[in-house]
Length: 107
Image (tube, rainbow, N blue to C red; front, side, top):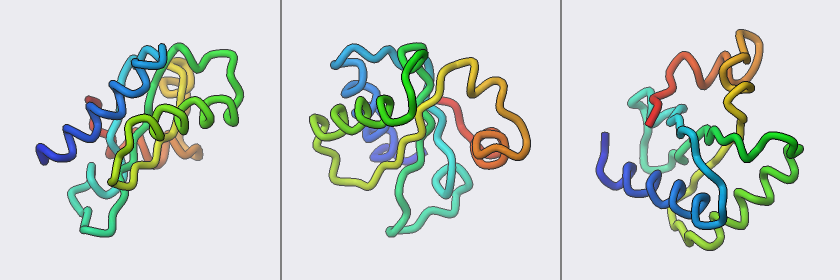
């Protein structure tokens, strides 16, 4: 895996943890996981955290947005937030089941 990509993922994790969000795991998916990324590709990450339990999607995205603003990443990163139970239980016919689980690389 590309060193720059690993550094970006580490910055994402550090930014979330700096504001009190424990990251259980990060899963890289999309073109970077498939090996088909080009210069225009964003970095697709599923962030799994117990801290997301009891939060709706808007609250999760606000938390992620705040952390990403503080991280000041220049590369385009798209984050999908999940709880451990959500990521484990989602199957075929769901975004996680169809897009993340088949090609995802757990980091």
